[in-house]
Length: 211
Image (cartoon, rainbow, N blue to C red):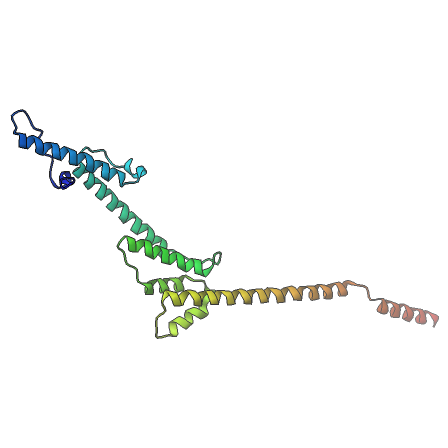
């Protein structure tokens, strides 16, 4: 068990010949066993679809170097992708503000796993700056305060503001809906013939003709 990682620590020794000593042949046999088991262990630890893009190698040490470089490239691409997504997020009112901020927190967590630390304060600023203009009141409140908000402060405040905006919108829609029948009634009344006026005009013409 102590020599299991031997192939990862040592370069491949020359293949023994009949002229080599028993010690040299035993050393080579140990290295081959370590190399074989190390390759199996490395490949089992990698997702199968990723293995297809990695050049084949029968040397565990060389194969491990290729894998590390490949994953390093993958990590860099992921970092760039997550940062771009975070910086380009915009609130569109289609989903709730809670989900919007939590998505930012999720991206923050993914970047942290890649050793990129994004402070909570930055997430708070980014969330507020990318909310729609309807959240102007809460933005003004934040900018006028001397103390910073944490994420646990920001989310409930934004949710409360969102609920208030929804209530105001529903009340406005309700008032508009109430005003429409009255307006329609006034239009219909204006279109109806005025029988009293018609009768009065008729009587006026009749009395005029009698003269």
